[in-house]
Every structure is written in structure tokens, then in C-alpha cells.
Image 1 (tube, rainbow, N blue to C red):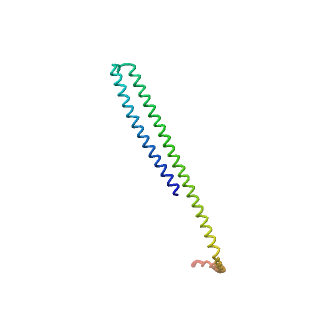
Image 2: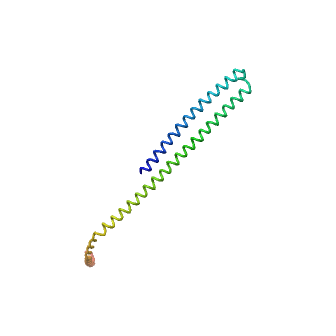
Image 3: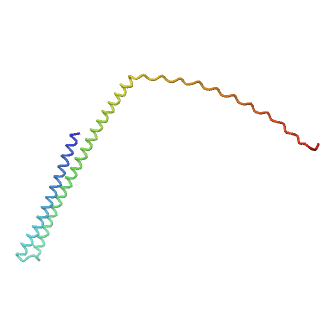
Length: 154
């Protein structure tokens, strides 16, 4: 378990360092782009060319360089995130394998203990089943009574 925890901690530290590096590089790229825009404007303004195609080309070149830098940073950040996810997934799989091994070992130990305990115990004798009760005799059916004769006219 210590190996799992230390691996997980190292991965977290690496992920945090990668995130801080990304943020710092992004900040520097943004600041550098702002400086480059000012420099391009000042250079062209000093020559009176702020409305020229040369200035527009220089602004486009600066923007393209900035976009390339940002795209490279984002690509690297995405790769770092994927690597961190992969590290966590591998650590989780390792943890699950370790846990399954522990569970299997405990199951074997419990099975062995149950077998050794069960071998020392004598089985109880089964209780005899009682004899079935005799069925009661059926009651005789009553005899039919003759119908009474009506009184009166003969």
C-alpha cells in the first residue's frame, strides 16, 4: 500500500508542477506578445509607417508567432494532463490488483480455518422422525328419514 500511496503522491506533485509551469509559460507568452506589439508599433511609428502594409505584415507576423506559441503550450499541457490521467489509471489498476490479492489470501485463510475447525467437530445425530398418527375413522352417514304423511283428507 505504501508503494501505491507514494506513487500516487509523486504523480500529484508532477501534475501540480506541470500545471504551474504551464501557467508561468502562458503568462510569459502573453506578456511577451504585449511587449512585441508595443515594439512593432513604436518601430513603425518612429518611421511614420503605422498605416503601411509593412506595419500590417509585422502585426500579422507577431500575432502568428504568438498563436504558434500558445498552441504549442496548449498541446504540451494536454499531453501533460493525459500523462497524469494515465499515471492515475495505472496506479488505480495496481491498487486493485493488490487489493484482489489480499482478498484472495484472506479467503484462502478463512477457508483453511473453517476446514480445520469443522474437522474437530462431530456431527450431531439426526433426530428420529415420529411415527405418523393414525387417520381417524370416518363417521357413518345418517340414515335418511321417511317423509311424514300429510294429515287430513284420505
